[in-house]
Image 1: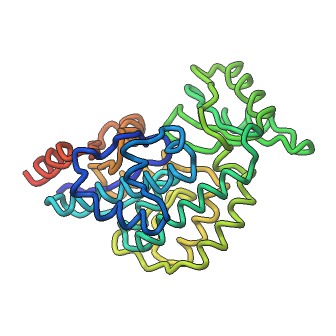
Image 2: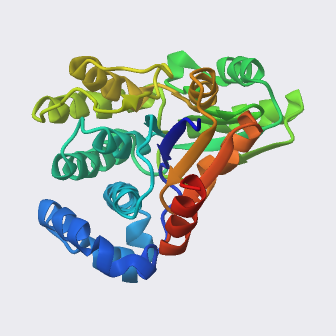
Length: 312
């Protein structure tokens, strides 16, 4: 019997024009999001401008809404319920909505604030992130340690453990540049800066985490109706207060995605459905464990293919 995980992508999967083929079906949830946010989110998603959609405080509500909309639409059209849910970074909030932990309107306003807090924690131009391919996790950690100058406040850390041989690092620019060079010297296949505006999931996000803790304290958290695995420890959590605390830790802690997929596999998951635009997590799943069937839903046609395939 198939054991299903539904997973939700993070920043970088957004694009202007996403979900156009299911516009009528997703209109109610985008309207709810717009009411909560105070601006027309569907117009931004449909028409751009792209520069605005790619700003963190707009990206996060747009991706959350798109992902939850696709998830709900899939279930409405006959897709089976998941046995477990998880999300990558921002995507964890989509998973929380899917599991019934957070109300959707609360979640969309929380991620708007999250984006604002993350962007203001480190001024634009002072920090960033880089992708490193072809080194072990331990090698990347060692390079980051050597490249950091704690006394000068120049920190660089492993931020996303995405797949074996695929790690994202984050930090202050000077340390990040040293780490990129250090990874190349260590034999990395590639080490390159990413087009992001802040060093997410590093210690430099501590000020954002403190602000997020206050925002999260004002929102009701429920016990999950579906098993929920969180980023900070790749473990299943049921206690609402533990889930809330983990979201604070997630701001400045690494995303343990490799371990998340491996632990799902150990729990018996054999099929993983990515709910949201793009196929980033589907691709990572193939790199982590080729025995897992990876599917994605980002359109009406892909939902039809999913429901047809899983209900055969």
